[in-house]
Length: 227
Ligand code: DX5
Ligand code: ZN
Image 1: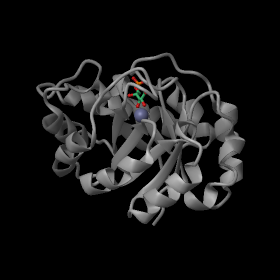
Image 2 (image 1 turned 135 degrees about the vertical axis):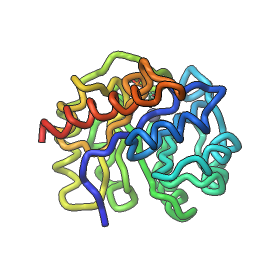
Image 3 (image 1 turned 180 degrees about the vertical axis):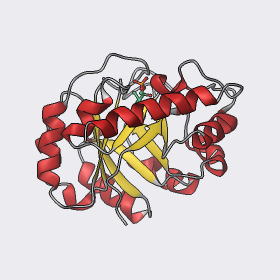
Image 4 (image 1 turned 45 degrees about the vertical axis):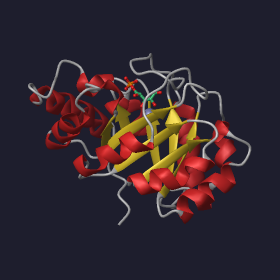
């Protein structure tokens, strides 16, 4: 069953990079709905994180949904590696190459849910001819590459996407600068998956996981309060 309720997806970009397994277990125990994994290549974005071997090592720790956000170019040659790594959702940027339609077909063909991400400068209309191939549209509310950046308002874009999607089973995910102040704006506009890195991990640790829980509940309560 398609679930349009609010889902909080902590980004492990803000976790302890020496301790991903325990960090993933901690955020799930504290109420995370999905786990968001930011893959960066130092080319499409000016930062580097990890690749398919690391993502495969995360897999046994993820009991919810492993949501892999590729900030890489090109994409297509790595799709099978992320399928093998166990990604549930694989999201590629529309700006990452000339053939996003083919990329989404290949992601679905490899047995994953297909996501398409839009940088702040890319209009909603860019996905108009992709809806039948798309399970998730990720609206970036920062320029991708780093955690902890200032939220860029994309309320109009989210509203336009919500109208365009109609009754199709497509998630709208928001990525960047989500906290208890910004999440309600996006929930009200029609988003259902809220990625949050710094606002979830701030103040907590695997020794103090209850802070992750407080942070997740604060974002969720604010978002649900806007509906
Ligand atoms: C940005 C990443 C985000 C990032 C969000 O390039 O795609 O997922 O981790 O971090 P915050 O929530 O700190 O803006
Ligand atoms: Zn992301």
